[in-house]
Image (cartoon, rainbow, N blue to C red):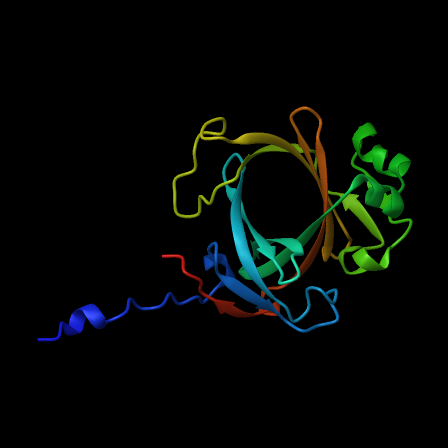
Length: 212
């Protein structure tokens, strides 16, 4: 006799929210002029999921890659019952100098008070990710970074299981549609990111990969 049950395939995962995406899954961004050409209307694959652990909470970051190899980072933010998609790109020291000037940027670290900073130049390649000015809304704080997805696992003790301490400095535009994030790692290595905040509805399609 034919074994009917063996021929049945496992049901495909159903994705209803971007926060459910796993490594290997894909999403499509709306075709809108709010995004640069390499991102608007594009389908991107999740290549990694990372965790930023705070004292009483955690944020999860999806690392996305386009077909052309461009990398963008995505965090899903919930605020008063609404969800937002925070798309971020990392910039280098020369980019920081071109956008802000290094002397102006250094004030963020040197001043005792919360800092405001103006954009001096808006290069076309970064224009969608830039506001005209940013303000620091809170003092720097420390989190622990894990190169691991802890969404369905108990969070570890900060210093255990490979957690790396990181000082965070965050500035945002007046309308909170853009932000400037600075991560300072042990040894002084500094990473700077530009973030574009958009409605979660800009993610128009979700496609499951081979994750179980």
